[in-house]
Image 1: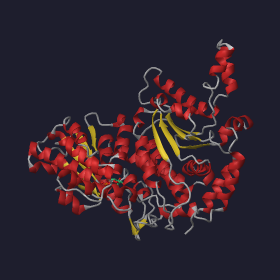
Image 2 (image 1 turned 90 degrees about the horizontal axis):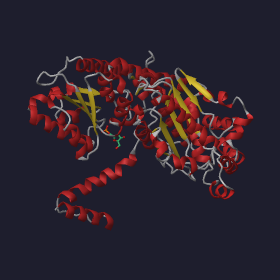
Image 3 (image 1 turned 90 degrees about the vertical axis):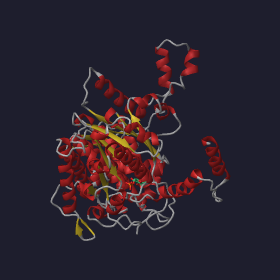
Image 4 (image 1 turned 120 degrees about the vertical axis):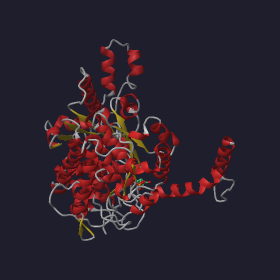
Length: 548
Ligand code: F6P
């Protein structure tokens, strides 16, 4: 199999040379020298508009980046994913979240079996159950309407649903409230249980494996709370499970008829399109859930069929590679200028960092180049008043994605105009900067003395030349949100292909889980493991002292 290993692709070597040519080029000059730069480097798909012109590249760089994608056989690899080839090599699995939103009649195969009929079957079940809850046909044990929906899950079984539910809050049924219990910290459970009434609460236990300690512990606590209030017979009316593991669901004490199935070809962090999206469908209605799938499908088709130089996920991925592997900038920020998208960065952290935080390639060799970047972010304008100082004047360049809808769901006074002026200003300021000379001139105009100008001009200067993408939507609705999420999924996929890593396993989360299982009995009893380092041992002892 092809790998970057010691035999780097030809395009990689060319890009190393390109970097030397390009590293000091100023985006200011690129814009000054080419009036059409913005026009050239924008892409539109339905009501989504991607402006990637404020990036440090020119035509030649992009040509070489695309050559790199071609040399890494990206086209073939995309086809492999859509054809159900087992690209998750360490787990010997197909990767078919794209099948969950396949709106065409095209069959999709895994292990020579068309997976579409089973997917459609579960979608039907999601529709009828969410309709039944929303319209009061499926009610609680005492006959009351279920209006409090509690999703118990963690990682991919939480972050996708919570992010989408929040993003689509405006679409929620008026009488329905959604809650999410994820953390093993009892506080997460207690805070939700304090707010809801057992008679009107539906618990959705979401776990692909149904073995995750956090989810099972939280689910047990909630089950006990319900049984204490309404008795054992009430469980069937208040608990459903979303899982690939029927045996464990039954063992836990949830009626298998109340189970919504999904399959091992759906990765946890790619699962919100599956039964894991049940809470979304209950909150916003199945028709809107379908629109979310349609949005993702539109991006899938764009990704699958568009040439690389006009392909949004490919372009974003390649620019990410350019910074990560040539500028040595292993980080990026995603800032959503929409309060309803406040959980998007947390969702993307799992998507990107759990997928591409890898150091062994698909040839079973340790990599000798940087792979997945560190991703952070938040909601604008809030974050302008926290970490943006570093983005503008720190010593580290942080490529940034800005996400903004042109129309807000809450057009109060001129709030949205102010919000939009801010996001545009941030992109412009990061790119343009302010030279020391410009800062001095500005101070002079403001009537400062020569001494004052000398004292302040450097502090008031901005290096600029800091890259950003702007993803502009008409409005955040189920369809556009589906497109946005799929855009990032495919971006992460492309980068995994170029780094020749498996983006679909997550073995790095196992060691800590294993060690926690060893430490637990030591905290609960008097036993002490002999294998701990002295720091861990002393922390265990100190915790026990505090708890005495
Ligand atoms: O610990 C990581 C992880 O396996 C994630 O990949 C996954 O999304 C999460 O745990 C939850 O897993 P499950 O859905 O099986 O409970």
